[in-house]
Image 1 (cartoon, rainbow, N blue to C red):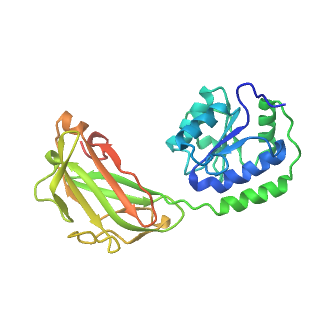
Image 2: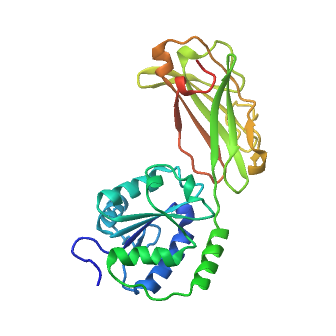
Length: 297
C-alpha cells in the first residue's frame, strides 16, 4: 500500500521543451504502479485542473509527492527551476532522483543535483526499484523494450531554441559574442543593450541610440540596439547577421559601443543589461556587472 499519511505519488520536474519525455515516463509509471497512481507532470492539463493557480499547484504537488524525478539534460542542468524543485522536494522529505535524458552523463551535473544519486532515463528497472522501496509498493512488470523505443522516439523530437550572448571588452570597445546553443537554426531580429552613461566613451556608437535615455536604479543609462534586415527598427542600420546556426559556433557581431576604462569601484559595481531577440524565440533580459564583463577592468 502507498504511504498516504503525508506524501503520495510522484512529481516529474522537467523543462517545457522536454514534456514529451515526461509524458512517456508518466505512462510507464502508471503501467507499473496502476492507473490510479498519482503522477504529477506540470505540462499535463490533467495534472493541474482548470482554474488552479499554476505556481500554487506546483508547490502543493511538490509538497505532497513521495518521489520527485528531475529530468536533466544538457539544456536543463543549469536552469534554476529544476534545481528549485529538487531542493523543495528534499526539504519536504521526498526522495529526489535526477534522471538523465538525451545522453546526459550524470557526472556533468552541478550541485545540488550532483550530490544526489541519479539514474539514466534508460534504467527503468532500477528506477522502478527506487520508487518501490520508497513507497512500499511493488512495481508490475513492464515492457522495457517498448519503453526504450518510446523514450528514444520522444527524445528524437526534442527541439531546443537557445542563444547565448556574452559581452566582451577589447581596448575601449564593448563587443557582443552570440552563439546558437540549441539544435535548430534561429533567425535573429535585434540585440538591445543598456549601458550606464558615465562609462560610455563619447561619439563612439555605430548603430543607433535612444536619445531620450533611460534610468536604472537611479542611474542614467543609454539604450543601444542593432537589428537584422528582418528586424529593422526605426533608424537603425541592419548590421546583425540574419541567421545563426549551431555549427557556426561563437559569432562576434559588428555591433560596437565605445566604453571607458579605469573605472571607479562604484562604476564597476553598476551593470549593463542586454537582450537578444529572434523569430520564435523567447528571451529574457540579462544583467551583468561591469566588474564581471570579460576584459573590462
